[in-house]
Length: 217
Image 1 (cartoon, rainbow, N blue to C red):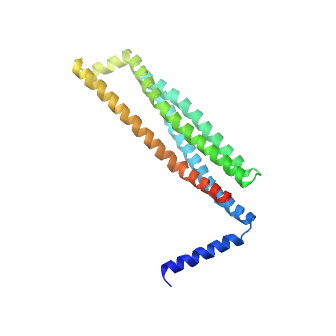
Image 2: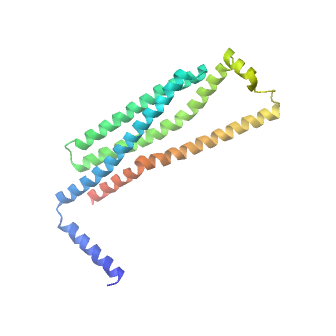
Image 3: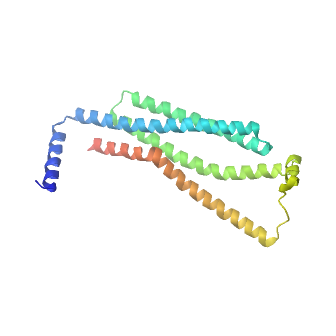
């Protein structure tokens, strides 16, 4: 028996086995399949929650230990933002558990899962991209404010003075380079975030959509 004949016989056997199964059997198999993907999504939530708390511990430590006031304010503010984001992740994890344990038809559960994860991925990306310019502007403002403090002036005078004034050409080059590198950073962050979300959630979301198609067929 050649390979093509073997494939044809295998496909025929699988098709006949699918026909012999009742709708309840097929629904039960799909329920187990979707449950596996949901468990993987929950693991992704747990990964972000644990990593977020560890990262935020560093933020809080820097907020109290940094020498410059601008750094203390910067890390203090974003530690609060991080806590809000972590509470949101915990809320999504709890909601996912509630949907999974709810006594509803599998189709309703799948719709709830898909809508929940799609909305989360969309808002996650929007939040990340909105946070980048806010971080840049906020850090620039704090740096400008700190530049007039006595402590920073003493720091510069101790051997780290920024040096001579820039002429017009140097200033133009500096501004252009800042804009270019900022743009590249935002572009890179956008694609990294999309890859990150796809890795943690997007691939499993596509599998859930495939399960929905199988259920409808």
